[in-house]
Image 1 (cartoon, protein in one colour):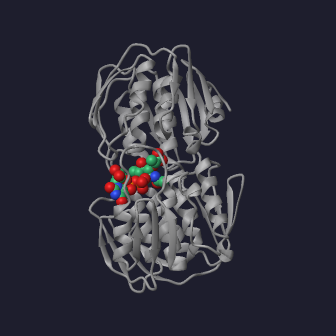
Image 2: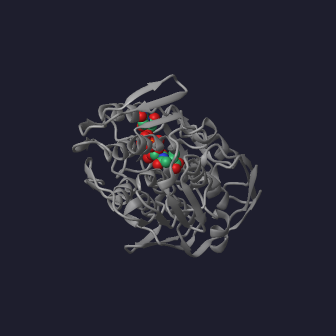
Length: 417
Ligand code: EPZ
């Protein structure tokens, strides 16, 4: 159990280097199975989910090591195509190994993935895309067995731009004979990062960042190296923390275009935002006004992963903020915990209403999930007195050295393990 102790009401000031993206690292780690030779990845955050992906690679027979923020992988020694349940249940994105394994081995055996409990998280779109590429899939509700003597290029139309299903289809399509065209694909920066990595491995792939991705021939080339893009959700979390606690924070090593919708709302709420290509400065008096309505949408819309942290930033904002969650059915799990701090929030179904209160007071909270836990940190930083968040390891799945990064900005926060 991890305990986050926060003494709130400290202004946040200074510069902070934002970590590499968890959600870009994980599919790239799975994709490394397709690398014909050794690959090196830089700026990989040291996180539980990354560690879980490395353990999956090692279990498959690959060499996979992390030293600091650099990961070395050699999948030349890959010897298996099944992943045990104990590893699959650690995180949702373990399902991306399905597309990578079917591409590399023509076979994959794994169980249904774990991950944050955000409501139903089916993988029907993943499986439908793989079937259209020619994979034969048997599933019995717990195990998935996927085989294909030969995948063939095809046109796939996604009814919803699922991030994971797009990634799985991109990976499997690398081994298909002929061109594959994905229509209605997810457009997230992490998809572009995966395209860049697959391109560096020798895939003919284009269109990521739009809703149409084309995958042609895969001609494996030599060893490769790639730098992981900055984490737009960690950047959003730090920006929301600076906005609500007040202060003057420079986020470095980021791409502000990746979370421009979050910066837009913080600016509307009264923050002064100055961006360059690789940084964003957030200046806030801490006295915000309500914004919205905020509606979560697939990229480039407002990210569902930033919804809980923006909600936390709005708890003391003057007025009423309406938030509508359209991606996950159960992403207001932080609300009962935030209420313990004195927050005035109601929600019904997928819509929440935050009515700003003059003051929050510290309390004992329990982290419900990764971003819900992060929202409690943001709220605790601007609450009066001490907040203690009891966490079963959710927050450290996605935030690297978050306590020391916030301490460097002047926050009074420490993590007790
Ligand atoms: C990715 O999850 C991210 N995870 C999530 O981040 C993020 O919240 C999500 O995309 C949306 O942006 C990683 O990248 C590792 P989806 P993913 O498939 O791929 C439904 C975080 O906090 N759906 O786009 O699982 C699904 O139920 C995490 O870092 C189907 O119905 O997201 C959900 O309602 C949490 N059938 C919606 O689509 C499917 O086959 C979005 O899911 C697949 C998805």
